[in-house]
Length: 356
Ligand SMILES: C[N+](C)(C)CCCC[C@H](N)C(=O)O
Ligand SMILES: O=C(O)CCC(=O)C(=O)O
Image (tube, rainbow, N blue to C red; front, side, top):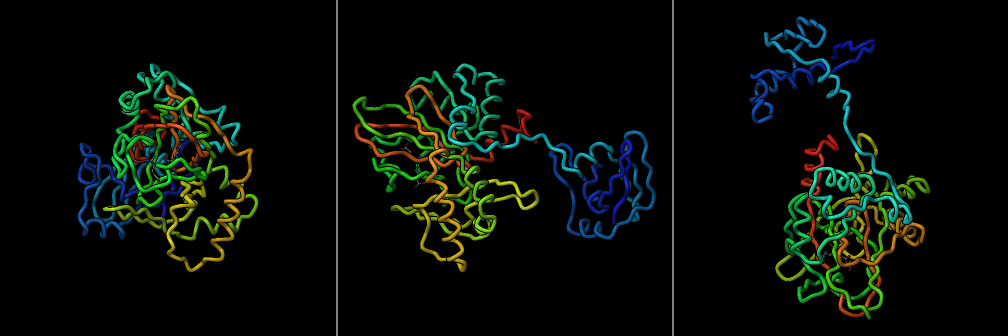
């Protein structure tokens, strides 16, 4: 059942139950706490409700329902909600060269102001990376900076962490071996959202230790173009990832490429070649064939931005998108940083009215 609303010279059909479900009168909606008010019974009764009388004037729609309830809606609000009109920043998928050139590079001082925060957050949403320069090379200064965006996320690795000093976890990240580009914490029920890296100490005679980065959205798009079936398989086949160390056993299952099934947009990449568990899926052949294609794309040099993390420059990656790794290295190499949860990061972006 739909009702036709007129707005300018457009006619829009709106689902009647949805309209009643979103009545904003004080009986149906708590304006202070911003949540719907209902009982199970009231909700179920709404499923059968019909429109008895309906008047649309310049700004409002007034409805009398078959159960006697009356609603008044602001027409523009109804249209915006029903058509899903949103403020958004569309991700732009980057080659290696673009990853180097396009992300915002702002100074620590800029970040203390709203405009600077907006510039950084926009860049992270659009390109998956944001860079802050002129930062004191300490963990404390790094934490202060992070708090302009959101609070650091506490995980099994700590809240603010350092890698390369005496803090040890049973993971190759804490060694000096090379790491294939990957996303972190794929074994969490919500993978950590942002990853903050700041090189604190580097032996000037040390060799290697370059940071390698690839835009996972770009890899997925190339895959979609080259073989839509491989892409589809990686959005459907659930694979298990895990992390174990004394006192910890984390596991989660999900596809390598997550898409929004309403819009087909890519929302998250969960690629970590190391942390896959042996748990087989019932579509193992299709999985390997498609995953190998994804891995083969990762051999392409034009997708890489290789850089060396420097004291004074903080790099922030969207861990749901950017794959990061490193080359092997010698000499002391201590970097600090933290994670930020995606929920909190996006909340900040909404508060700053960058997205809705
Ligand atoms: C060192 N640091 C805390 C940044 C990350 C450690 C996580 C390593 C793990 N293999 C993963 O990819 O999730
Ligand atoms: O050593 C590096 O540069 C990166 C290590 C890494 O991949 C990680 O900590 O997740």
